[in-house]
Length: 263
Image 1: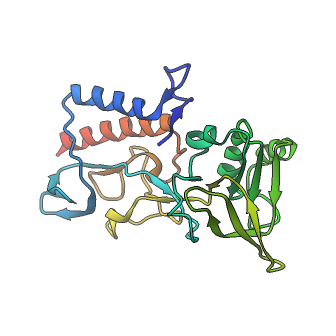
Image 2: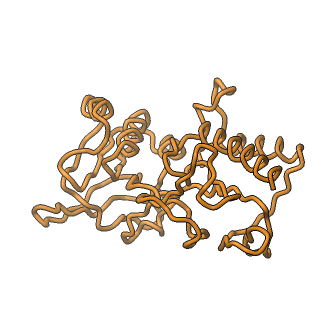
Image 3: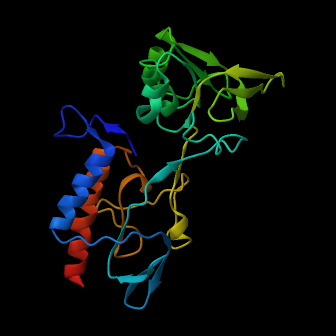
């Protein structure tokens, strides 16, 4: 999803995320990978294996690796979906350069919100971080860096009620949760960081998830169901980085191969 990946080994100057994905896909297909462009809507156990139900038909497998990732939570306020890609963003790395010398808002109070807010100060004239509480949840180091940054401002005890604009974001309507007072904040963009939601809809009740909605695995990345593995952001205790997701994929593939040999 990243426009430019800076922290993947072997690319000292970074590489566009799309290009990195295409290189990985090309290399895998040269070793016999077959791909199907389809949406998976259910994974279920069946006699003799696991069935994957998709929009392009059903597939039977003796081993399955689930690597469906996670997506950013939405605020669910008016204007958010309509202005997505028009100033509403969930990726400062991707879209930050488009808002050079402008005022932008960041919504959230965790590590991602603060880290991406600091990143945005490279481009924006001012970054206003909106948080519903009176203190951040981010690590102390990130907080110290944010508070020391003269381009960052903080709007405490505040929630977003609406994202404003017609063709693009022009501001946000916000409300102080303690006083109940509403006001309008002028901004050219709204970067939303209010947590992630693992893409587990297709799993249904097949596998029990942890409290964050992720899949628990053992050290081989196998779930409690033999022959079903999980890799990347979808699994419990994932570092949520491209390089660790790639490592997960390799580990899960090796484990799946060993599982098949033993059958």
